Image 1 (tube, helix red, strand yellow):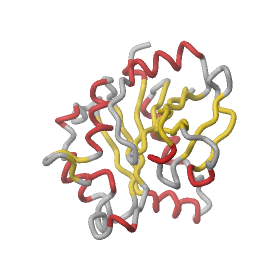
Image 2: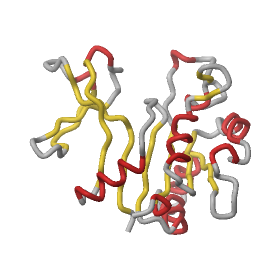
Image 3: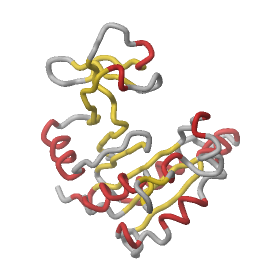
Amino acid sequence: MKTNKMCALVGNLHRYKELMPLIKNRPLATLPFDGKYRLIDFNLSNIANANIKSLFMVFNEGETQSVFDHVGGGKEWNLDGIQNRFFIHTYQNFVRQDDNNSSYYDVLIDYLRKSKSEYAVYMGSKILCNIDLKTLLHIHQARNCDMTVVYKKIDLEKTNSDDILLTLDDEHTISEKTFAKDATTQSEVNLCADIFIIKTH
């Protein structure tokens, strides 16, 4: 399966009062990292390296200007062509649609249909990582799962209270999830990396 059969979704709705006023008018994803880079560059580079041609991003209302300022036309990540493109949506628009008796997921489902992608990868912006999405897709296909979730073994003391931890069975299937603040007995845990692959149709 060629990786151009996969589209990508990036979400960044996390708000941390401890980071105010740094994120007053910007999402966490566009905070500077190592000079000219931004946190979102990890996601964008992973997407570009996997030759993914379609990207859908969701942010909080009032925080998108810094995204446009940094991403520009998307040329640096090969997202500036007729077939290679990106879309930015605000979470509050989803909420307003729901208030108007429209389906909460209409915009997202419409994007997935129009992308004509057999697979979709979702990535949050809270946890930074370089990951080979081509290999991840291959693993997902080989295991023939409904969903593949990326996790990393980590010391519990290095987690944040609202991090999601996963319990796996002998087949590496998720049997339970919990928040780090509720974990008390383990010293090493499976931290959900907020990266998921699903088959869209």
